[in-house]
Image (cartoon, rainbow, N blue to C red):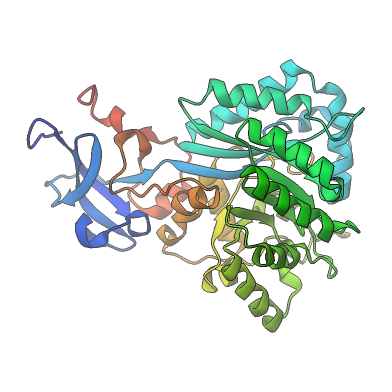
Length: 415
């Protein structure tokens, strides 16, 4: 490493994806496919720009902002090993996971959730949103044991990762305005996000409206599990978009799944996309669980459960990618790693290279979808940047070795 003056450091021979640079006109570097290449100048602890690369025979490394996991379930993870006969689609998974709750002691939840959170931090995450089942067996409208455990973990780990919590409430449950308001008040007391499950419930429109009204009163962001199926009758995403526009809701709204977009004809898709753009809603593609659960029939499935990532992006609807479930009834395999989730989305949705184009879906775009400030490479503090031993964006997505913090590359020079 070299220093230009007392407050400068230079990280040599790196590539930075163009999609993760806010001001290309000022950042510099030599264009190299979907990246720019050079030596990264760090001034006063922040990445400033690329300068011409020093001669070297070594392969370059990839610099990114810390990753963002937009959608996981830390309360459910790592339960599949104690389940038997888990087969079928979404409803079967819901039933199997509900049966497993007899094991959910404080210690059990904490151990599994901490394992998942440690995996996320090791994968390079600086921000995470986890959904948490809401309610107890004796009262579905009060916080669950998992909610209190994960709130403690969020506080304990706040120096390493921002953990947002979203309760997974049923949309019919919150159709009662008093219930919606009480839950929203509890969420707001811990800085959480109002999360709602929307499928084919009879009173879903009223429940969605109450979610918007309660979130507005208590200053909450909204996160919907919506249309997690391939049934033609599912219309939750359009209801959410209509009510977002009608109410003028300005807080961030993230809608996960949206599998049934696969059923819509081009004209219907165009009309819905116009509403999504107007409302500012972001859509989270969750390929792992959706590929495992959706389109089940006898034999090999012939329909994909993943949402229309390409068409949403082409229509300028913000699209992000999440991991969703890990080793539970909804997805029996996987690990907590946004890089793996994006790689799966590439394969499932036929996203062609260059792959750096899609990196905002697990970094800058994902943070914006969670209502957090954007985190481009230029201007970022060294603590918010990570370094991959990967020469290209395809190497990065294919790799399994964990990233390093930028500060570690200087071997004490930043201390």
